[in-house]
Image 1 (tube, rainbow, N blue to C red):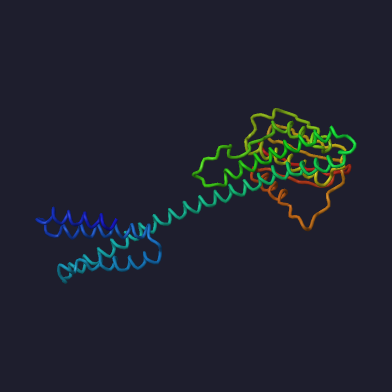
Image 2 (cartoon, rainbow, N blue to C red):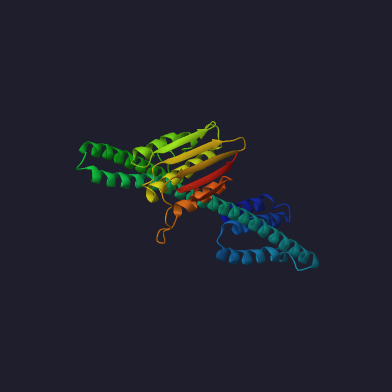
Length: 312
C-alpha cells in the first residue's frame, strides 16, 4: 500500500507540475489513505508508532511552503484530516473485530452442540456394547448360538459408533476440508421406532413406543431434540435400571406443542459423586435452546419418569 501510494504521488506530481499546489494535495491524500490502512491492518504496537510519526508529518506538511497564518490553518486542516483517516481505520478495525468475535462465538456454540451430539450417540452405543458383552459372557456356556447373535449386535453397535465419531471428527476438522461423511446426524421423531427396536434387541428392557399424531413436518430443532431426549433416557435406563421390566415412550403431537415422556418401572437412579452428568446437562441445554422444558424424577407408581415439552 505504501509503495502504491508513493507511485501514485510521483505520477500525480509529474502530471500536476504545471498546477502549483496540486502535488501537495495529492501527497496529503495518499498519506491519509496510508494512515487509514495502517490503522485497519497493522498490529497495535507498530501501528501506534507509525500513526504518530505519519500523522505528525501530514499535519506539518503545509509548513514546507511557508509559515504564514494561512499555512498554519492548512496545518489544522491536515491534522483534522489525519484524525478522520485514523477514525475510519479504527471503525473498520472494530467492525472486523466484531465480525471475528461473532464468528468465534458461532463456532464455539457449534462445537458445544457437536460435543453434546457426540456424547448422546457414543454413550448410547457404547453402553449397549458393554451390556451385550456382559450378557454374552453369561450365556456363553448355556446357549452358544445366542452368543453369535450378541456378537453381531455388538459389531453393529460398534460400526454405528465409528460412523458417528467419523461424522463428528469431520465437522471439527479444518473448516476448509471436505469430509466424505455427512456433517452431523439428523435423526428425529420418525426414527424413534428403530431406536426403540435397537434398544430392545440390544438386551435392554422392552421399549414400547406410543406415538400420537403425525411425526413428520416438525421443526428440525424440535424433532432432533425430542429424539435426543428419548435416546438419553433409554441410555440412562440401560445404565441405572437394567432390571426394569419395560420402558414406555410416549410422543404426543398437539396443536401447539410436542409432549415427550419416557417412563420405566425400575428403581430410581442413585446420584453419582464421581461422574458428572454431562448427558443431562447437554440435554437440558438442547431442550432449552429449542424453547422447551424438561424435568425428571420418580414416578407416582415408582420407577423413573422423564418429561419434555416443546412449543410448535
